[in-house]
Length: 120
Length: 397
Image 1 (cartoon, rainbow over the protein chains, first blue to last red):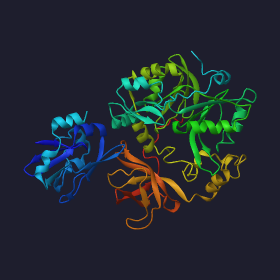
Image 2 (cartoon, chains in turn yellow, red; image 1 turned 180 degrees about the vertical axis):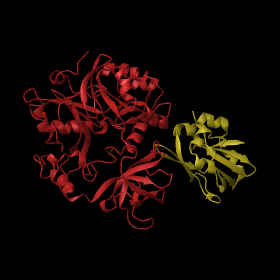
Image 3 (cartoon, rainbow over the protein chains, first blue to last red; image 1 turned 60 degrees about the vertical axis):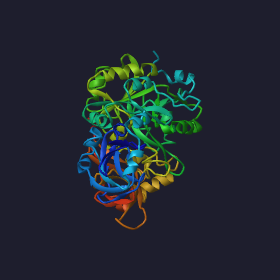
Image 4 (cartoon, rainbow over the protein chains, first blue to last red; image 1 turned 90 degrees about the vertical axis):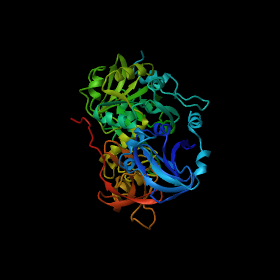
């Protein structure tokens, strides 16, 4: 189950835990990534607040929390090798996992077709 | 085709700056080439310029230091100055009234880095000053060229002719630059760092300097605008040459410790604060034979003689987070007021780590001093380091 935000994040839901990352579109826009900063495990996230930061050579970009929830896991590999986020942003380049406060809210986000249209 | 032409012929043409009156972005002679090469474009100083090409910023940056990068810098201003009666000697004397540099002592065939100062001792612009047998040619920043031209014209005596040149400007930088350019032009291998010469490239009359903005060996080539694309394409046909955009141009110059006007130097920074005293030859300083005589001389020379209160330094963040322009600097990890600010910062692909420059109080502006930068509300440690971050590759001898 894949959903997308208008800030170019993707979420994959398994039970009540969503894996979050930036989309291939966003990664392509950012270019080579050199730094990734992730939230702390246990942190409470509120929808649309900055949760993480990805930086290219030229600029820093906030990655927003797509929904309310709590961080359960972070991808240390992304921190250790920021370039890997750009190589496979929607797979191995995932950023963090969060337990959603309201699982039903997941369905309210854009699906793949809607995002493809949005990102044109 | 038109020669670099006498200054008189240049003066007969109106001053032209390729700017469309509707407010749309101006285009350099290489604009179509950038689009063909798939560049990501951006607005810069009123021009539609390439930020990067499909290879990407990292590759473009690293390739320039390993081989050769080709940059379109045609948006910069090129200004010719000549005196039919007094020759370049007269122009040199006049330039010294606006620039705190030894221009009179600059020989024909040589170029020097200089500054245009204002009455408060701040820096209006930094520029290259090239002397040929019959004229000077100044290369100024794109963002300042309109103001620079007005400033020069406001002080221009009747006996000196000033012409804004309608020419392209191509930079070819890196250890492979000489070999690539030598395929198209004779005499470039013999040039040393900061030599200038009038040399044909692909049969077109060009002005070539052995200089650049990357810290590497390389050349800056002033080309007739209608030959710019052919010359650029011929250089790009060399497998060692990649096109490089403004993004990598910035990371290259930052690693080289070179100032960007508008970021590291501006009208609020004196040359001494900017750590550019080396550009002001002793003959123009206190005690020199041609001491002062340029705008803001008292302030500029006081700062040199007494030492400035703050100085531009290199900064190396301790972690992996880049520290960028505008970040406040502190002396301690907690508390206290800001003591300075980062003026340029980002990631250095050749260094493999974040690099920055900024202003700190002179007492703290020593290599090894530990400062703190506010990044997203947290204070990150960084060390003052000597510049440049990567060793220069200039061909001096």
